[in-house]
Length: 144
View 1 (cartoon, one colour):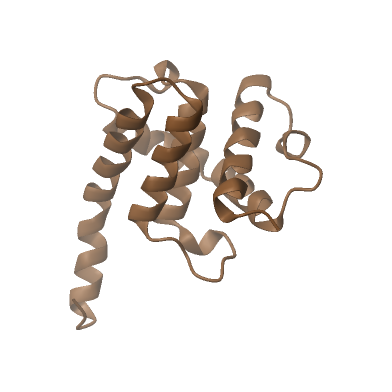
View 2: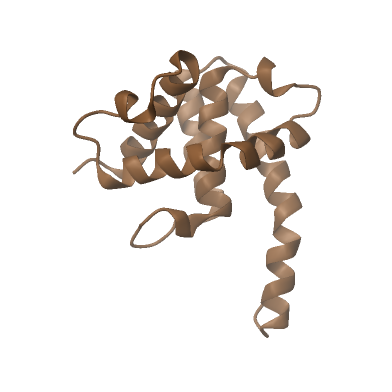
């Protein structure tokens, strides 16, 4: 079985190919894709409108269309794991900071020199905006 990092990258590439070609996601996923890869790609695609709105709101000075398709796919997969970890079956969900790190490493390996900083900036801004709601829920429960 492939490492989770590799499975995440397969999901990113399937979404990227779907975005570029318009082919159905099932045609862009590897035939032998792991269940985690399939679930990640399908859930990210299902929440694409939500994620694109967040990306547009936090990518200062950038329209969604101006962001490279591969970077958009990286952001979408990371946002799924950051904001909706229960949408993908996993033994233990990755923490939001881990999802950001995975996204940065993918951008370093497959995108231009400025992409890792851009991906980090957008995801960190979204996490900062979303975290107060999580913190408030924890305080009401008596934790944190």
